[in-house]
Image 1 (tube, rainbow, N blue to C red):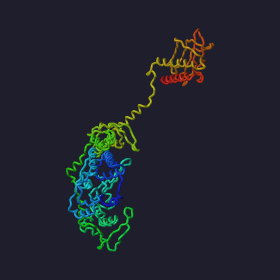
Image 2: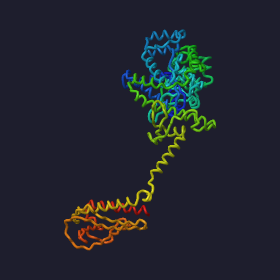
Image 3: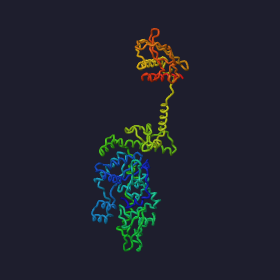
Image 4: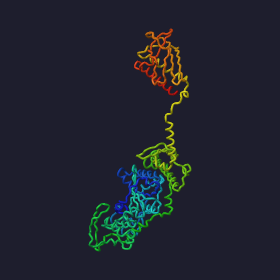
Length: 587
């Protein structure tokens, strides 16, 4: 579609730009070109009834919406009269029908399209999906790419999405030929400024190439190759080429009779062979008159379009609202998606778009030297708070909490977007994290007097000592004993001393079955609290003896752990740790 081999001529001007190049831009979309692209993918993977092309269109739109890219669908109107020959040829009509149309095309008017065809129905579905997403549609009078080019030429949009190369011939300055989504997403872009600077071809030169090579409006000059056509146009120059065609037709393309009929030329680093058929006058044969070429020039220079100041165009430029319920209904109808799945796809993108709009508003204000605090901005910031930092495909991101927005609670957005939109939220998040880390640091233990009384400490100590006494019974080195109900125990703890010893008197009345051995045992045991593993100053063997008609059990805390039961060892260790904690508190 478009001018034959023109994309090959423009290949060296092609630029591959990252997808975020389109953020905050307004672009027109030649909807027919997109549907043709997606339809071909659909046919190669599944039946057309599965509507894969429509789902692919949905994902393209939501990716561009997230970039705050204002989109305008532009559709084809009637078929121009000058294009009827090409149109019928594409429909594989009989040759005689083509010849009749060719001889009388100048007397025909434009032909209305069949709105009931399968392709027209696909266009209608795409328009419904776009309107639910807030994408307006501008129905062209004739060629959609001509309407897109006019909007771009009049600076009403920043570029056009079209795969028709004749978009430049209608006056477009920036054309996006293709788009790729996913990780490393990009767009293929051609700028008229690059074409003029690198190739020396302006709009007039490109129209001349269409006349020589052939396009939707003309079959071109038979036998004329790509390289030869480019050399002819360059030799005349962009300013004079159309005027020369208007005055002389294509007679200036005649060659000398002795010129070679065949030659090897290079175009875009590819060698091609061109064969020129020379007629009796030495000119190149062509099947069209000079008058027909003038009509082609007129069709490109003055296409039938809605003017830039028309009401139709103004309505298309107005921002449309996002229709949440309508989109859910369409996705259920077209793709059989539940509402939850539709929301999962689109709501994070809508939220990101709103955040980009907020960032663009603040950036514009800053450029005008108007620095408004975030709380005083007329539009409320869509971010409520930052939840945490994330990393997605190696890119720094934030998981943010949104304000009330169609029910969405949180999603992940790029960190640079949050920084440009609401740096205050980042500062709040960092301050909160710093405070949490400070609170999580282990603080120095407070004085035990503030935590518990000395009486409680004494009770805990007695319980531990009693547990150790009972634990010693299970040791094979200890004697079995039954402790009586009355067990007078006296414990003296001097906490006022810097190195307080605990003086312990342990008397146990018991009925015991043991070997009676007369052992003179000390009445007091002194435990040093400053020692990490407190020991009894005098080693005392655990034995049962009778003193003053009373049974007395003396506990040996310094006995090696190998001679104790595991339970005894554990209780002794707990006692040492508890005593060490008391020592630390009072120090």
